[in-house]
Amino acid sequence: NAGVTQTPKFQVLKTGQSMTLQCAQDMNHEYMSWYRQDPGMGLRLIHYSVGAGITDQGEVPNGYNVSRSTTEDFPLRLLSAAPSQTSVYFCASSYQDRDYEQYFGPGTRLTVT
Amino acid sequence: GESVGLHLPTLSVQEGDNSIINCAYSNSASDYFIWYKQESGKGPQFIIDIRSNMDKRQGQRVTVLLNKTVKHLSLQIAATQPGDSAVYFCAENRYRAAGNKLTFGGGTRVLVKP
Image 1 (cartoon, each protein chain N blue to C red):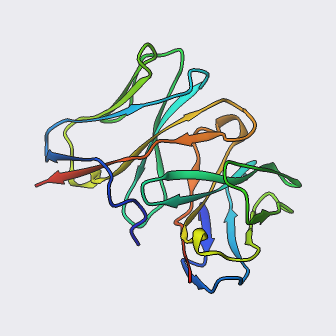
Image 2: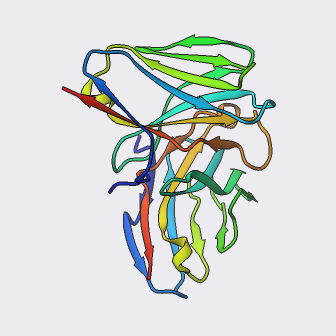
């Protein structure tokens, strides 16, 4: 199993640009989520999904959209990038009945100038 | 690339000694308390969990203690090795709760000295 994969590893955007961060898992996990990690802030939940076709907001959803058309994929879209979105983004997945044990991807480092 | 903050509390440990990492949590309604390890440039990795109705749980070289009276969680690492150098996060979880499922603490950096 490849586990949780994320692309790209690094990205630089200009303010106002949009882009999609990709996330895929091959463990047949029901639950998938996106976190951002800022210095001194730990990890904060952006959006999550409990299964295909179902998404919901986390702690910091503004400026981001998600969709879950398949069990495997959970892309995160930045609609109009802002410098405040400069961060490291992690995708995670888990079984629904073990949602405390999440498997994280390697992360995408995003810089918005 | 480095993905953690510049001002994390740091624990320096001699190789072979035991490490104790502490965490204070806030939500008395949490069902699980979890420890994650994050090595430089990688995503967090699950280490061990403990249910709220337990006060101690042991894994391989790790022990987690839960004191609900003072809302305190600790992770003990026996015979610390260079590979244990990382940032350690505690997290709390409400089983199948909607919304913010995993709430992470700020992290502690562990540096193992040879």
